[in-house]
Length: 141
Image (tube, rainbow, N blue to C red; front, side, top):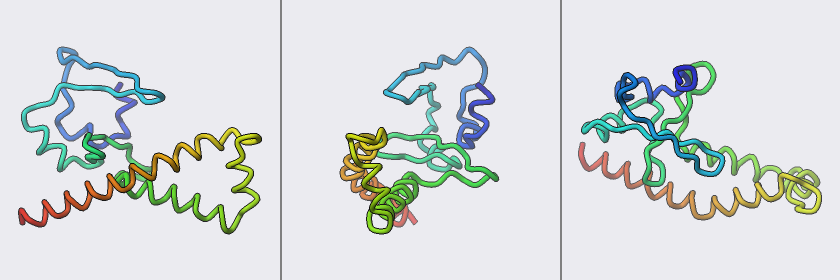
């Protein structure tokens, strides 16, 4: 477990329960493994300040550190990078775009379609949440 969480800086910030006396509940959701730990009463304060911890669509997540010790990017930055890369394929590499989006010939077609469909609802929600958090932070200063 220690090797697994080594790349997750938020899990080193003191909220991670010590010892084996704390229950851990692994939950499988699709291809993801969610580890549910008991939280301390100060969880919201710690989660807001933990390096690599982001509240994303109403749930707090710990994201892995990037190579070289770079702080994990916000989920909106990841969405931007993925959508930007895909948007460059369609106009500048139309043959590759067609190849990757043809359901008949590409195993990537359905995942790309699912990603784009998900982006249409997820990105606006994530933007609203990020702007709301910024406004809340500004109002409390």
